[in-house]
Image 1 (cartoon, helix red, strand yellow):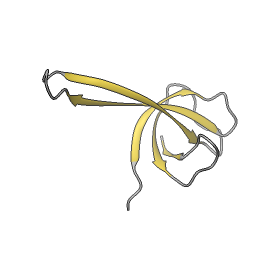
Image 2 (tube, helix red, strand yellow):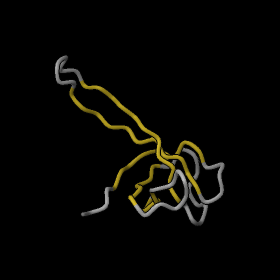
Image 3 (cartoon, rainbow, N blue to C red):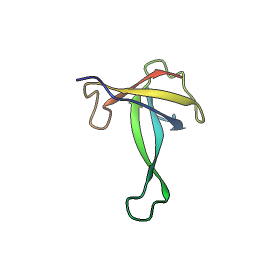
Image 4 (cartoon, helix red, strand yellow):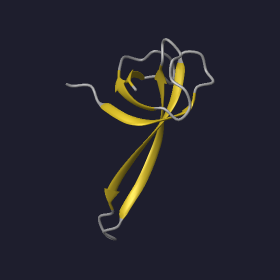
Length: 76
């Protein structure tokens, strides 16, 4: 099964080797037919601490690194 890749914005880089990425998705509401924006935060592994707040990054699923980290940053 291929690994999922998501794109989002870095919202926090305060932890060592970890960034928090806000991923937003848009979908049409089934009944109201209105476009809805839903967002979710993921914690991703950033080995070199190279990404800062505001950067747009792509994250990929990986094996669990810690209790909350199951994603790793692929590219900016």
